[in-house]
Length: 450
Image (cartoon, rainbow, N blue to C red; front, side, top):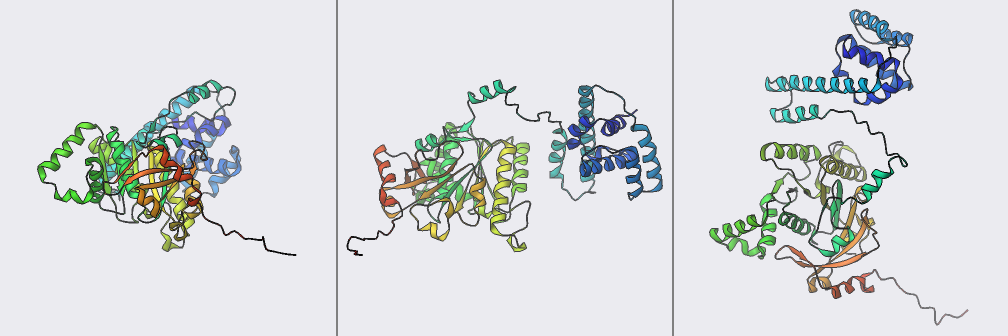
């Protein structure tokens, strides 16, 4: 008896086994009449939420669009596999998982050969992804956290130091409990020209100096323009002076930066509105394969001008709420898949651009974005703040800490050098001044007589 026959027998006679393995089985793993029968079993279980009887399977096979030879072979197989034979569940699950893994690898190799022979629409660049997906096949036996029985593991989780990407700005570390956790989406909200890209470039430069690997994806500016901003930050030079550096001075400064870090910074440019998480995923796998580069943090500049891998563009009739929310969900899914924090940005609405107390309602295009983000903050600039060389930060959403603690604070900003920096504690009083709040008209009833 073959393993695929054993699998089918238990699918038809062992409900516990069926419910545990059906999510991991694929029709492609089976061959001949086994595939035909598996297809009918899965359809029946999915529709009626119970195991099919021998009679029900025979009727379903008779209604299926298959040849008479396939029907005869499948009915004969039904007679063989509908008699239960007790088997050890642990052994059965282990053998089924091993068979699925072997079949996945075999099919991936055959698909790779087709790609090499030009018999597939995929290019040879897809072969590593095809093989890696096959090698990752496994049965996840974790079916949930038992509140009582898993209390010990929960206690250890509470006391485990979670890996975070720290900021070089004190107040950001305070409000995030030490930095950005992995598997999160973090969004800066600001109007045009306020400093979204400056913030991300500064944070990318800071992460690089902490020996982190940084991937910066840009769809708004050229790769060289992003690198220019990071040069100004790390070299501590006004950005307009970079073009006046002679080659030897420039190379000397780059060498000094390289000696201070073992991290790498990769900047990748995509055309505006054309790239989605499918492109980003392929880039990450290609970087790992060709450069042995795995990022510790990803910056995407910026989310609204990405495209969705699941939905066509707005020209297809999808509203902006659904479309931007879809992009945010896909990018957050990418963060979870590659176990990194992702930092991006979004624009304010027109009313939010002139508002000195920006809120979540000022998010442009889609309120689905703040619903998806783990951490969201606004960058606010006024003439008064600009005169002091400062920019205000207001927490809008925070899953890491109490968002009412340090609700607003200011950081120093040097636009010429593309840098942010800590300011003296006394400067934080400005963030709490009533003048920074929207003013409401006050009505005077003192002279009113009844």
